[in-house]
Length: 421
Image (cartoon, rainbow, N blue to C red; front, side, top):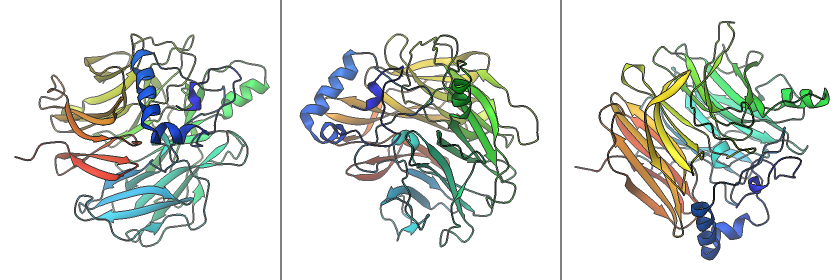
């Protein structure tokens, strides 16, 4: 179990992505795995986040990976090996991968946790965009890095730091999307305002969300702008293009006395002010970061399908359709104790939700699907099992069909969400 179990305030934490000394035995020792599962099943999550810092617990192996389909239907996979983001492609739905390309020629200390894995997406002219979080020498500090390829992945530009702020503080948990005009946008969790408040002797709950975009296909980025104050410290962001072509974010926020519900915001690129609206209303109060970010997808009619984790009445994964400023519609509790790290995808009126279910036997990859736009869902189904460490599942849609990308210590799998006829 990770050091994120330590509580605030002023409790030492592991750096995001750094493995605590005891993480490897837990993931590789069956007895310890059973103990971990038992604790998750009978106790509410014990969570943590040092003020202004970001804990994490990546397993010893670099399991954090991102997958995406390009415009020609090829599957691409980005992961981390020896301090470099490795990019590979497959023409047979992940059964075989071609030779790897190194995105960054020089090794960096790259975060590779499931909640903070390298990100991968494509531009309208076949551009390949990759971002990642680089851990800095100073404790708790990190930079958001970015590289692009304009020749189909054969060569990548030298990595750049996206933000102008070079303060040795948290700039991490990056999320990457391309808007309808083809501009890459990156959002991340940022500690600069929290640290400034501390230096001024003022209170500042959580951290902040900043973002930046590029008008020149990723050659450079506009100066970053603050999207929202008071975000959770170490839950991943969901960043998705909506049907209008704008990019929207869903993220865990901190309000009141450590209430950690979610907020929803448009990322303006026209100079207008950003404004976040409350999106979930569980009222879950916890003075810590659960390290469980939300998922977001748009379906028919522009419906914003979301999944999230909260534990106001016990650990649970929820589905709902966002109605910013009000409680989500058609809410459904998908998984309870042991359910973690969910994702959602949609195509037309089809909706799929996948998550990891932890038990004494290891990890089970679960899925539920809806054919009526999320009004109702079928029974939970098991897609795969793993007795070794497993990363956060990622749902992908290609030609109207959904797939789950799942990386475990035993290897990468791309699993169809629907049974073969």
